[in-house]
Image (cartoon, rainbow, N blue to C red):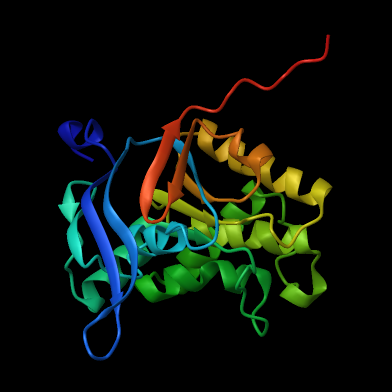
Length: 242
């Protein structure tokens, strides 16, 4: 990365609108309404809001899964808001790691094969992608599960595989959508500790959550309401027992 690029925000969003229309052209839903948002490199941000607030729409645009109707989205100083599907797919594969609530692992593949998938689509040679996947799985403490299939793992282990898959391509941005939503409290805490560690290593993480305790672990909490930013704050200090 060039020195100047390192000082630019990772994400710059200006006047972002996303409108869904009926076949006759009339407005069905104005999901985002003129949203402005800047995310520096290395920041840990939670996106919160009630159902219908625009969280999923915003994350889909940031994740290059959708395009805005109006406005700009710059990722690493490149305006990606109007790129075609092929270009958006390349950016997803190279710059963004996704962590889903439902894990989205391929049941027919082993743990290490699941983690290799993003590298396969990049055209990385077999031996290299296998070695890289093994190294990342060791990072998430799953080096003893390489040959297992997803149905042989606990929920927490499956989510760690999903995190390894998100990390394997060394993305600029990690997007986590309710990453502990399918896990019990203790296992969810373990996953959050891993995300905390990744942030401390310098990763930029954006996380959608409904959980206030999870959001408190982040540096910044952005709350949406009716497609607009209702608040953008640092978390309040946790109360201590006296």
